[in-house]
Every structure is written in structure tokens, then in C-alpha cells.
Length: 75
Image (cartoon, rainbow, N blue to C red):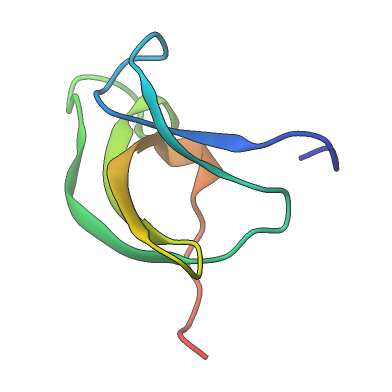
């Protein structure tokens, strides 16, 4: 991701849904993936996954495309 870009967390499973939070480049803090990525009829990278994101001050809940997520270990 370019250093000026952000990952938008959406209120619903749509690119036109309201943005509830933004994850900055090289940002960390997705603390959980909640449930299955949907819709099941789409290829995995195109599915929306519900997440919880902690930015140091608050936790936001919403959806991001699966292609932007990668597993990592907790520190």
C-alpha cells in the first residue's frame, strides 16, 4: 500500500457504505476477525470480513475486503 493510502473500515459489506475508521499504512491493530467472510459465492479475495480494530484509543467494528488482510501472531 502506498505511504499515503489508508484501509477504510466500512459499516456494511459495500464500498459505498459509510467509513467507520481508517487504518493507516503499516498500521496494526486488527484484533479479531469475526465470523465468516461473505458472500460465500465470491472468491475469497473479494469477500468482506467483519473485523475489530484497535487504534490505541478506541475499538472500531466493521468490514474490509479479505484481500487486504493477512494473518499475524500477537506480540
